[in-house]
Amino acid sequence: MLNVLVVDDDKISQKLIKYMLNEYEKQKSEGDIFSINFAEDGEKALAICGSKMPDIIFTDILMPKMNGVQLIKEVKNMDNSAYIVVITTLDDERKKESVEAGADDFLVKPLNASIFYKRLDKYLKSLNY
Image (cartoon, rainbow, N blue to C red):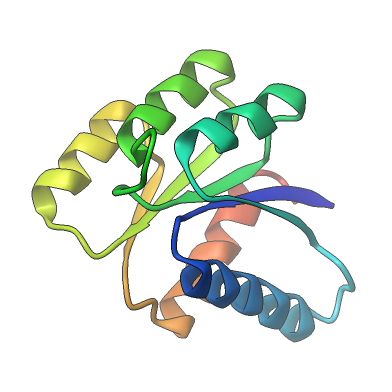
């Protein structure tokens, strides 16, 4: 089972990503694929990463206490194996910052289910799952 961390201060976004991950599991008919944890900001996410590094981290950029770009840098310094996906409504400049910080992928809100599921296929393949 893959350990997933969703980092977003918006509860609706958290629920949507959880729903999409659950739907992906149903489509694959393989049972549980993901163990999902949540954090509302980068500081809480780092605490979770400190106890057990997630396989995949979905993070927003604009959050209180610690933004997503700083979170990416901190996580990559802790353990470079986590696959980090930025999910945000922000522009190309934030995308560039995220990639420079170490993000592995970038998705734009609102999420398109078809694109999200194709990307999940890619992530799982890259994680040899």
